Image 1: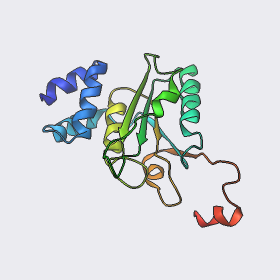
Image 2: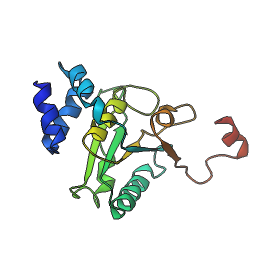
Image 3: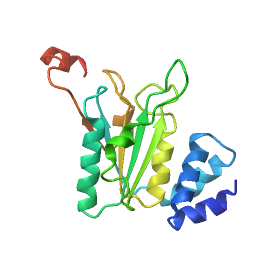
Length: 181
């Protein structure tokens, strides 16, 4: 992989280069360190919004609504949707994007599904670096959607500028809420 060429293509807005850059980082391929160092001057423009909550609470539906609202306001939006990796097969059904079909074809929206690859905390280990690539590529809003989480997965709160917790009705009483911190 030619990191300099990939960086140049990324800076000109080539979507294929964006996908390749993310794959290089996600898979730890040779040259990923050079790529991360090369995007460093382009970081810091994007606002990161985390969307988290238990399985089936409506995270993807809310993420789609957020993307629509940001697009209506003129923002370029990227979504990083993390899905769980099966402890049995090692595979992942990257299905969160299915619920975002109303925004999926918008040229100013980029949706990237990621497998958690066994990482705990609601995100994949390279989610932060992937967000950096999206920031460097010129997206000014990045929505981070976690896998379904419980009470102790807090990685998204550390990685996002704002975090939205999506809950289901009757998911516990006041004491249960207090236990979450």
